[in-house]
Image 1 (cartoon, rainbow, N blue to C red):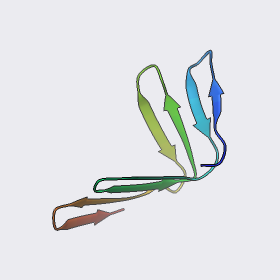
Image 2: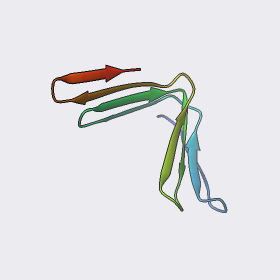
Image 3: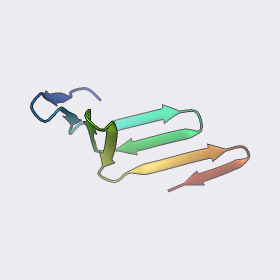
Length: 61
């Protein structure tokens, strides 16, 4: 993500830039994202694709 915006009154960080998230066993892509600081909830929107790898199993959507 190249640019993100923080709204202090709502405590939300968000971006309309594409996002790629990668971690152990997970890859997630989307066109935009939002993170609510107060309840630690992240949301990825817009043609979301996900790949989950657990052992020998690979799930893609």
